[in-house]
Amino acid sequence: MLVKVLVVDDSGFFRRRVSEILSADPNIQVIGTATNGREAIDQALALKPDVITMDYEMPMMDGITAVRNIMQRCPTPVLMFSSLTHEGARVTLDALEAGAVDFLPKNFEDISRNPERVKQLLCEKIHTIARTNRRSFSPPPVVAPAPAVPAKPALRPGTSPSTLSRPAAAPSPAPVSAAAPKRKAYKLVAIGTSTGGPVALQRVLTQLPSNFPAPIVLIQHMPAAFTKAFAERLDKLCRISVKEAEDGDVLRPGLALLAPGGKQMMVDARGVVRILPGDERLNYKPCVDITFGSVAKSYNDKVLAVVLTGMGADGREGARLLKQSGSQVWAQDEASCVIYGMPMAIVKANLADGIYPLDEIGRHLAETCI
Image (cartoon, rainbow, N blue to C red):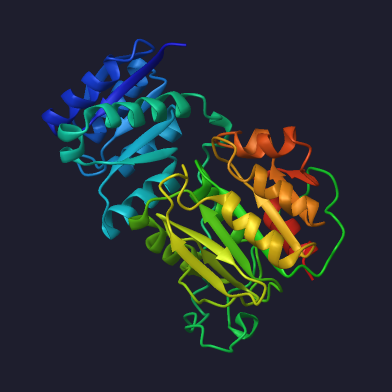
């Protein structure tokens, strides 16, 4: 399939290099370029590309505003280019919330020094997001704390998050799938995801009450520079507490620990988190299989694992170990996935105990875990 691409960037050098890299792939055609957000909207409407690459800092109109307008007027998969800084991470997360599908680091030195690797990564991303599910592009509902509720206090050692004040939960949508599974006292909820995961995790976790009874571990394929900013964003939006995991952290009810980018996260039988260096032999850092495998060994049948949107099959072998230990595994359904890869791998391997739309998963978690 020929993928038609619109390249948007205010840097002439970057537009040319991206266009050259993409045009070298016989299955990709660059059909236009734009120098700012306003041009991007006009070109998207006129050319109807399959994929748009988008810078976020541009004159006239920034990339985030452009993405938001494009999603309203002509929903199109957008790949953002981002700087690997805390501010770059924050802006990229804003773009993903606005409707962008995925992102790549914007590094001029890499383009100059390692063009083959950059070409491979960029073309792979373009082909992947060209296959995304456009029905999943609608931005997530904004969950803001009620003004009358005081700010969330810091979690102190020995303090249960269930005692901390949070705003009341938003009403749950009416169920549209099978009834929720039977209630059980799980010792841990483990959630793995990749492409489309930042928005998916936000939708799931914002549905959980402040007194959610189980600890949570989150494994999102994401660069090291991004996970801290992502954890901070989730912590502000959610009623539970969320933080980037550190070596030695202890699992607590109502606390979600996000695996740090570039590293691996494991959990021992005492509920102590171990953060290990990222193994270069592994494709994913963090890797869902690694974390799922460790919790299968430590918690046997007391784990509820959830696999959300993402390409590839990371999580399948870890889910197999969890099933062998007697734990439960849920998968996000195809219709609500941005990329139906990781959940599909679970379903095809007959490892899924439940298959649910994204917007039902948080409600089912809240109703199932006791």
